[in-house]
Image 1 (cartoon, one colour):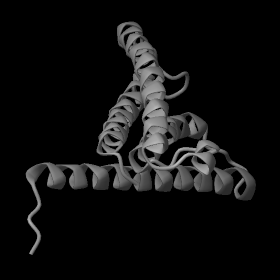
Image 2: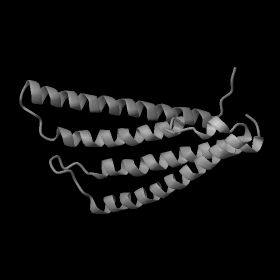
Image 3: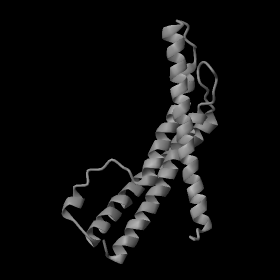
Image 4: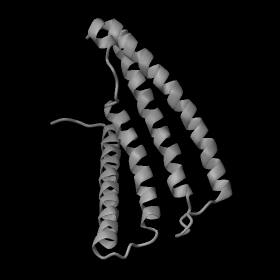
Length: 167
């Protein structure tokens, strides 16, 4: 019998929420594109505004994909250093990489926060359906904030491994 702490349960639930949200967004994008293709090319009566509706789940899906990649540590990387470095030095190099990534992510999150404040103040709407654009614009801030949190977590793990000094 394994005992699981409350933080582990919360994190597992949050990860499931992220995964299910990504799935729902993928299905929504697929469905909207399918409907538009049928309407436009089969029935020859396109639905105006469907491209506008596609914008929001697509933006959220893009940033949520980045969040999930940060969470699972599935970044696109070259890994040249891992060919030549082992042990504690590898953990130090990984901690340095995560530290630089965290600085960049925090800087971008700060800029996204400023943009979100601007978007909330201005209150823009989409051209045809009058959907508040802040729905899509807040994905930038939320996505970068979550990526920063996961990158900080990665940095902490690499620092812990470097201090431990083992493989």
